Image (cartoon, rainbow, N blue to C red):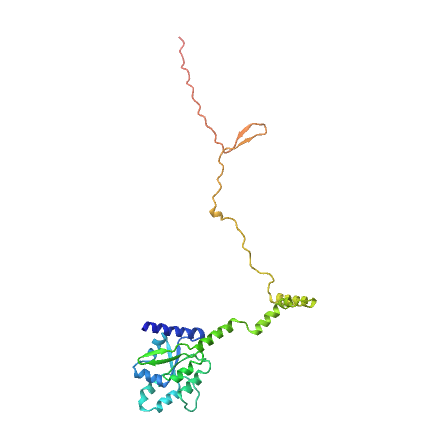
Length: 274
């Protein structure tokens, strides 16, 4: 069960990283209720507990308004106040203290440009931030931490933004039509000299921009066999007989000469005259 929960959380983190540009180390904006829950269930230190949840390095944040709210709750939230004062302070620019929900909403804004993970135990705040695209929400349940799955509104926002990126804007479409006026001429059956002039001017524009008229692709043609894979031709070592102009035959240079051994004749013995 624990492995499935970690896979589900990593999938949510990858969704916000790929679709909304979240990068490590992740920023987690904690309110007073979430800090009090972590201390109540001994999920300390806060950095390690959040790092185990997201599976990477994190930086916990809070605001001055949240610290002031914890201070106003008295002695029961003194430990949570001390833990909040050790966190990084996100700039909220509020001269007077306001409630935590309004303060976090002002810090996050409409598009969450700072890429904050919002950690809270307030159910109303969690439902409200699920309607804003690009705001992941975290909460605690007993001694475990969870990340809310992306809402249907957030998924629909990602899908529509991808479709807009795939299609050309109207300004680019108009420029392409100006560069290719043949579409206008083909739709107009009564085109004449004026349209031909328009085609010439368009071709001049393409030449000025360095656009080639013909494609630069080369056709694939059949090539000869690989010379390394072919066998070498055998040379003819037979003797060739060349006829002389006189009609005689002469042996070629390749013919071997015969060496005949001459037999030695025995000399007759000298007979003494009697």
